[in-house]
Length: 225
Length: 363
Image (cartoon, each protein chain N blue to C red):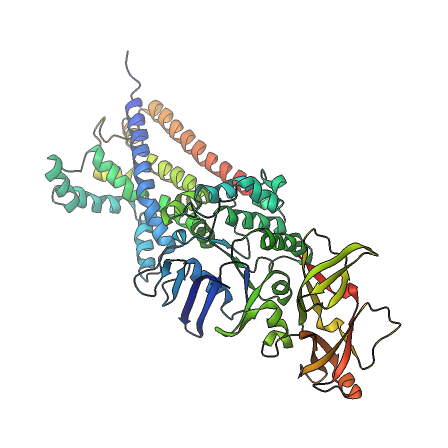
């Protein structure tokens, strides 16, 4: 029996989005906390760099990532020394590119959630015996949980729909870099509208359910508080 | 009084300089009193380790919390309880979980006393019925009582209270004040109480440090601070005589209680609603009138013979007269008109009077 030709890209896309979101949460939490608290005059510069992927055409972003991740690029070169192959046109390379590409969608909601937690509540926690780290996990994180939800959903959903960057960095290698948006493009190129329809509908529904859940949960939380 | 520790606190910021050095008593409540901006809250924040490194030196017991150079313990290593003006309960936790937050992180190194358990603390502050609620469902007074309970459950060596009543209206204040007095009466933990309300200082504190512009201007027991002519509090518009008394007769005397002051002056006050034999009586200076003749046939129950020891002009129209009765000073605020017409002078013998109803009391 023939496998549905969209299944492999779909699973690959979900895998990419899950891994990217997990890495993004790990990276963005300290970065967003630092941005929320820092008094350095370089803050606007860092914020601008983080926000760049929102406005940059994906092809431009993809072009620079191609250079960075390729065997001559410093990240690609390093990876090459460690593993024997470059990052371009691999799944790992897609993950790295997606992390850069979706970074602002996770950092920004987290930063604004952290900024809205009163530093005086952290002081209260400290006077009750909490270390800095303890106060962060027991007070800041629970109070910023809407930021974590928004950041995860936006980061995940944004990675799902990635096209331009993937095309530049990952190409179109089945089971390795052919994600759902590339597969749809392929099918349309081949005039296979049926599969393109199915895949597009899946992506549309998935994106809607994710975003709707996020808005609904945030709406409920706002009403409660 | 033996001291728990010594605080030599120095803070200097643009436009603000604070330099105070004081002993923290082992027992009782030490008030830090002064106008807004005089540095009271900053003192508590430095003690708690919440301010950036300052050249302050703080030693508590045999421990140095901060030496102005290398040592600067973070807040969690200083055994303090801190009650903030706006309670700062954690909004994502129920009352019970707020209390549990402190309990989980409590100080365990005090050998002398067994820490209070949660039941004792919630009973002491009357919050047993609030445990399942969320902080935003509580009134301001209830929130503040929970915040005090939370600070106590930390089992601190020193309790810091930063204007705990200031953000409450009059009604809510009276929800909390009796509980603060109860802490004072029933717990041995020393407290620092920051306030800009003289009334609170008189009702709660044993000793007081008066601050202005980052400097100590007077330091002493509340009884002395209120009446000593050297103390700025004796010339405050809310000045009052504070007397530590013993209940001598709390029988059914038409709703009145008879008390005896430290110098054996006998006073009638409003019925004292407590089992305690010790009572603090506060007689506002405005309520005390002076009389050159022994008052007779008067409805005013308290009449004492004394001698004028000091007269201070408060402003053009008001005078503060200090009268010694058996070497105990009473304050009387009178008009300049009365002073002139009765020709009241220092050294003059006279009688002072005040109604039993006008004296406030607290345990």
